[in-house]
Length: 191
Image 1 (cartoon, one colour):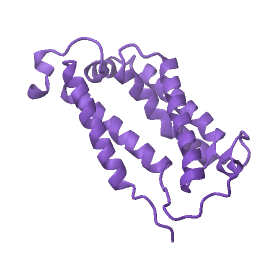
Image 2 (cartoon, rainbow, N blue to C red):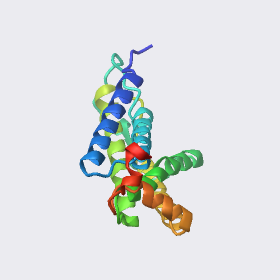
Image 3 (cartoon, helix red, strand yellow):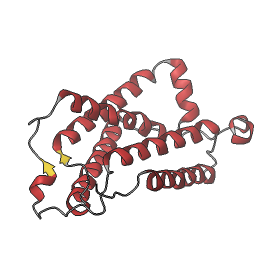
């Protein structure tokens, strides 16, 4: 059995540092409220899950790849791709389509899709590099990129549709990171 970089000691502290940085960011802009802190917590948990499930395992003593990059990626769309993989890759990035509009005051559908594409591309490039240089457990796949972007688009569409419901719109206004300044009633120490 090959030794591997442990996931939890890497991912959990990284997520905690990011969470503290996001809280500080909100505090410095006089935007820190309990609902916004909850969005920061969800964002950190989501990103930690993405990293844990797409970058790891990273093996420490597995033999290095033979030098050929061809085994580290798949550029042929839909070749050997299963429906279950497509559904998982759609679902994995639906939260991006919801989180991006919560982090911005006027995020368009395209911004959410672009963020999803950027995140998915970063994941696939990381998988390519970790597989080739660190004997990672994943390969980069163009299909993952395509279905991840569809997931971000679906999430953005769902967010936009649900935001038209008055109660949902009121909730969105409470948790959105930008927009009107919080009132003293919504400050963290009183929420």
